[in-house]
Each structure stands twice: as C-alpha cells, then as structure tokens.
Amino acid sequence: MLHRNPNKRILPDILIAPGGKLEPNEGVIEASKREVFEETKIEITNIAVKAVGIARLESLQEEVCIHIVTADYISGELKTSNSDGMFEWYSLTEILAHPKLLAEMKTIAPLVLDPNQPFISYKVTYDKNNQLTDLVIEQ
Image (cartoon, rainbow, N blue to C red):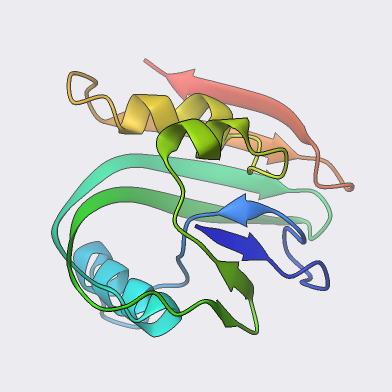
C-alpha cells in the first residue's frame, strides 16, 4: 500500500493501492503491471479486474475512472518510497483499520477481495476537502 505524501495535490496523506494513469493504447492489465512495477519494483501476474468506479473530485472539478484489480506476486523487493509517498505491506485487517485509508476502500476492498463477489461497479463523490460525500454501488 502507498501512504501518499501529504504534499500531493490529489488525495494527500491517504493510504491507497499503487496505481496511475493509462498510457495511450494501453490496456488495464498492461497498465496494472507497468504501474505496480514502476512504483514498487514488484512484478505481478494473474491480474483480474474486480471493480470499476467513477470518482468525482470536487476539489479539482474532475472525474476519474478507477479500475481495481487483484493480482499475484511474481518477484521483486518492495521499494519503500518515491515522490508519491511511502510503500509498506499490510494485511487486509490492517488496511481496513488504517485511519488514513481512502474512504471508499472501507466499503469496496472487502467486496473486491471476496472470491464469491461478482464484478463491482460504483461511483463516489469527494467534496472540496477530499471527504467522501457519496458512494453508490450499482446493482
């Protein structure tokens, strides 16, 4: 997990999984492998898209599309930090109890990690203070 630098413009001081933007002509699986490796130096495989969300960030007057994937570790030693923040391994219990966890993940993470849960589509809104104001899981 990445504890984002408090000086970041988007979601400062938040605990979040590694990720980033899709490059032109890049698929979600390809981007997941690239982003995780670039940020953490960890190689992953068996990537499965488990959820897609739309997040409205009122502080930026922007919407972003989120793809949440699960994966298996192949190799690599976790890089502990970069300009985005600090990386650290956490158990699911530790993630869900972390006071800085991205608010939507308190609801979404247990669903994503439940092998009996089907694909999830959701939408969230964060106000100008990066506080979660709305979360809807689509049925």
